[in-house]
Image 1 (cartoon, rainbow, N blue to C red):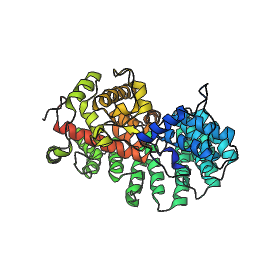
Image 2 (tube, helix red, strand yellow):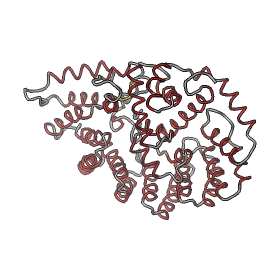
Image 3 (spheres, rainbow, N blue to C red):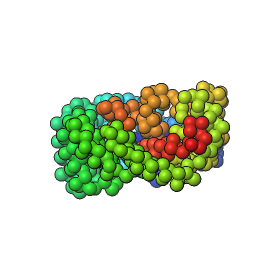
Image 4 (cartoon, rainbow, N blue to C red):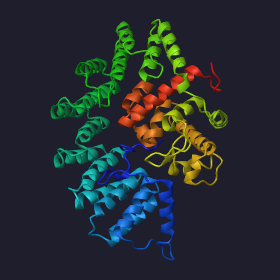
Length: 463
């Protein structure tokens, strides 16, 4: 669930200077109990040792209780200004506000961090995240400045590759296509045969699709296929072949387009395999053999696609206009149908809901008051989760790819990727998804969804 990133990279908070750690519900309950005893008569948090403040802040942050985490960091900043924990506290203030989409506030904290502690690991991370905040505010010129500063200050830093790629993306979003193309070439020169070069060419491919420069799309797709360096990159061979076929269609070369689509295997769990079959059918190509193969393969793996919690799914999903097969597709990917599952980002239960997200939808779902641990209840989790998915469906016009991307990577990110998609078709959107984890997530969920549709009717009975 909106655990990604992981929202920028859906990495959890402790990505900066310490090893990311997930604290279980028992640890959270213990810290909350201690906090009750650590407040004065007005409710204000009293002074504690730095180590204790930082530990409790980490526990709250990893469980997405951001405001309470900030209380502890603010005490460190106010009462222990010379502590070596100050950079991490500043980063926490910025990152937690970023999670809550308070981007202007986050930028102010990151600016202070970069100014006062530029060459710490937290300062380095803060500069990269500052650029990300500017992107989310549509401040592309400021984003470019932050990322270019990173490339100068930290030429071998952890975010050097993403800084180059984010610069060219920011130029693209600003409509400065020539500058974006120049950065594709700069990136290729800087990174050679590394996956970052593949990512840069993939960015060019997406940009040319957006601009409807179909000849350039075909050329860039051919460049990527010739490089054949998809491993560990954001690009996938079948994605590139699909976009090449799509461009050939736009150029009127329908036979060549069908030939390109045919190179994508007919596999029901393969996102582009299913879409390629659909496009071939639209071109008048006889797809009977491909469709039979997909049906046969779907039935072969039917045991991996069970229908669990059918009664709850039909009661809550169908009533909200959500296809219960799509909810099953998410549930399979999120928790493998384990109601007690908990992620490193504190997402709980069958649909891996975070507590802060659940609090936005619990009342509409019929649960006026909930605790974080209530999300382990299948009935509560499905009720709140389907209410959330229904809201996403309304927000994204029923485009299930965008719903899946939003579920994993966040609504604001999904909205930004949708704005970059032209035309607003499923595969074009999926190609624009900017986080590696989220992109793979979309492919898997939509592959699951296709298999569930192949096997089951909307009422979840076998076809």
